[in-house]
Each structure stands twice: as C-alpha cells, then as structure tokens.
Image 1 (tube, one colour):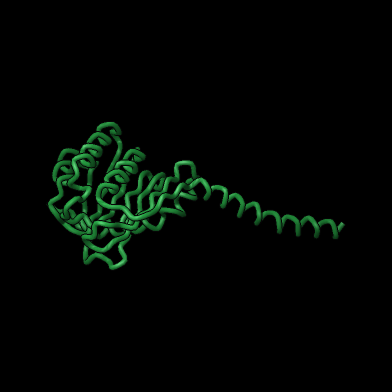
Image 2 (cartoon, rainbow, N blue to C red):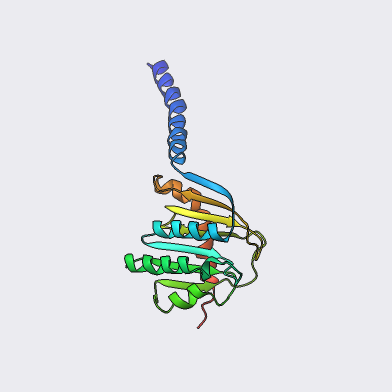
Length: 191
C-alpha cells in the first residue's frame, strides 16, 4: 500500500509540473508577434491597429517630440482617434510623453474629449533606455518600440494577445503597464 502511494505521489509530482508548463506554453503560442524596423508611415498604421483594439483604455508612452512625420501630427491618426472616441463612449486614452511639444493631436483632442483624452508629461529627463508603447485594454494588443530621441527609424514589436489568457497578457505587458502607472503618478499636467 505504501509503495503504491509513493508511486502515485511521484507520478503526480512529475506530471503536474509538466502539465503546468504545457498549459503556459500553449497559451504563449496564442500571442502573435510581428517585429522589425519601421518608419513614420508604418508607425501610423500600427498606431491605428492598436487603437482599433482598444474598447476601454489605451495607454501611450512616447517621446511626444515635434519631429517631421510624428504620428501625433498625422491627420489619419488624429481622425482615427477622434472616430474611436466617438464609437466607444467609455474609451479613455492616456498619453504620457517625455517632451512637452505642440502636437496637433493633443491640441485638437484634449479639449474636445476632456476626461477621456488625457495627456501628462514625464517629470525629469528621458531615460537612456526608454521603451515606448501603445497598449490596448491591459494587453489585448500592444506596440513596443525603442529608438534614440528624434530618430525616425524604430525597432518595434507588435504583439497581438487577443486569444491569450489575461495572465499571459499580464506577463507580456505587465512591466510596461506598471511603469506607466508609476510614471503617471509623478507626471505633470499643463494648465
């Protein structure tokens, strides 16, 4: 009897971790990743893709600097945001920028959608290794990029977690979401 219990305990001890690893790996396979290097026109397309996935909340962290070709001055992107805010009456878009620049999107939408299109600015200097992101609904879809300040070419990843579990989404985007919330607490909002 004791021998059978030991065999069952060993079997459970070996099988259970394998099942957990398989379950985690199977859900990770549901995350679709597209990566590469993009430029300003590709950024607009990816911005709109992430925006369309947002139903409740979109968080944006970027430099927000006034450079030629910025998505925040692009008419297609601005109209896409305006249309999405009209379609989804509960959607909130929160932007956290490193730079306080005169951007068309901010100027046009902040006053048109008070309480729903919110813009704050990071306190202090831009970190050297700053990851920028646009994340829809706590990780359903997100765009991550890294680049030097003012650089038009960006290394990016577009991650689609639509079919993944919330736990997997949290594993993929949790660090960025936590950083956004932490930085937003100390951010400034201009009058």
